[in-house]
Each structure stands twice: as C-alpha cells, then as structure tokens.
Length: 367
Image 1 (cartoon, rainbow, N blue to C red):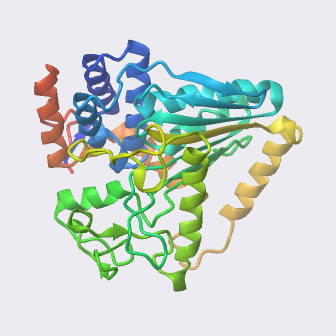
Image 2 (tube, one colour; image 1 turned 45 degrees about the vertical axis):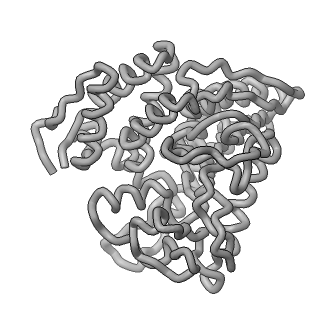
Image 3 (cartoon, rainbow, N blue to C red; image 1 turned 135 degrees about the horizontal axis):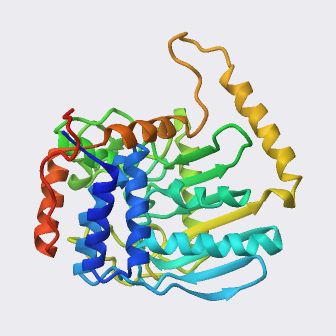
C-alpha cells in the first residue's frame, strides 16, 4: 500500500470531475464526499469508486453537471429530480433544501429520484449538524441482497445515516448498511485476494459462502443478521424500509429494477421509476426542545455510555462515530492508504482524461 495526502487525492478527484464537465462547485462537492469516505475509513466508498463514476459517465448513464429540480413540494417536504446526476452532487443539494424547510417548518424531508450512487451516507447527514439539526440520509442501491429465506437478489445494501449534535462532545454519527457490510468491502477483499467472513454472503443456491467473488458467480449478499436465527429478518425489514422511502416514495427504481453501479451491466428493462432514489431529512432541535438543553443532555448521554464497564479492560466502549472520527484525525496527519489496484485504476483513468496521477506515495511513508 501507499499513503497519499487527502489534499492531493481531493485535488486529483476534482480535476477528474472537471474533465467530465462538472462545474468547479460541483467538482468540489463530489471530491469532498469521496475524500470524506477515505478519511473516515470507509475505503469502499472513497477514491476507489472514482472510476465507477467515470465509466457510468462514459456510458451516458451519469450526468456530471446536473441541475437538480424540485418537482413537488409542501412547506416541509419535497420531491427532487436529480437530473441523472452523480448522487455525490445531488444529495448535498437535497440536504440544503431539507435544512431550509426545517428552518421554517421545524423539519424538512426530501425524496430524490433520477439520481446515482451518492457515496458515504454519513457525509450528507452531517451537513445538518452545523445548523443545530439532526440529519438523516439513506439511499437504495443495486440489487445484490437476498431477503430472508430467499436466494433472489432484490435489495441493495441500502445504508442509513443519522447525525446528532452534542455540546462539548463530538456528534453521534450512525452510518451503517442494512447488510453485515457494504458491497465495497467485498471489492476491497477481492483486490487483496482474501476470503470474506462467513455470514456476509451466500452462493446462488443459498448456501453460505466465503468467496469474495461470489456475487460474480450468481450469489447474493445477506441482510444484517446473516440468517433468521441471528435476526436477518430485521436487516431485511430495515433494507425494505430504505427501498420504500427512497424509491417507492420518490418515483425512483426500487427492488430488482435499481440500475447497477457497474457500467458493464445494463440497467434492467422496463424500469418502474427513474434512476436511483435517496431520502434526506433535517430536524431542527429547537422544534422539540431548547437546543442548548438537548445538547447538554447529549453530552451526558455520551459520557454515560463512555463510562460503561468494558468486558475487556483494553477495549473501551465506543460511541457511534468514534472509530471514523479517530481514523480521520490519523489520516489527515499520516495520509490515506491506497491498495496497489486502486493506484493502478486511478493512474489509468487519469491518463484517459489527461490528469496525471502520481503512482507513488505523496507522503514519505509506506504501510
């Protein structure tokens, strides 16, 4: 692996989006979302995904300079058409709308259709924090997940993120797939040539599998919980909720009709909606109780859970968002590690678009 500074990777990513036709502001937003994922340790949704957006753009399945439009609204809700844009750009615009509505109505909710993969869900939810609001973000995704008791692929990994501000303590940030892991984690292990843990996926006949390539062989990912006895029906329910709120509600494609992220697979025939769907929400804290009062109690909540007695004295109890926040501090200082296949991928798309990528570490340290 090689280490790259976040500033270098962000600048390279911006230049790639500019070459694709994005405005400077759009390129800045898209790069910020991707680099946020790498900084927070969600490597599966960082610059490793950049070539995927390029390939979709080449196939004219992604608009790199979208003009999202509100097509229906009430004082507290809206439906947004993403103009087939990169979700990296569309979702932040939707959160701006949700925040604006929350400022006057107390809460704001935006359902988005005709969008694309939107990167790390937590980024969009966290945009509400600086406004003394709770942010919520979710999206549906390519159908790679089987419902409990099934071998059919009908749901995506369908992540949910919630960001909650505190006073002196860092915010609570919950950012999770409704599967044991995001699909990108399988891709990371593929690049490393390693197996996946049992409980992540099944083969085409519904048998447990540890093959990181199993999705290419007709297998499927499992819902959170892995099997019925361990609560997979709950993961299935969560994934279903996301699919309905993001797509059935907005008019996007849902279930098996969600278009694949990979450009070499064509979207399903006879779509039931437009593009991929997201659902974004912002809740003004003082619409429920005084913000300062709430945040003081959030500090107390966080401190109470931090003091929970650990099973292993060497393993402290964590608050949601702690691992990502600590890793971000480390990676801002020491750099972001990239696997060799990712470096090769970035070098390749850089050559294609006329943006040089330094295929050696931009930080004087190797992992």
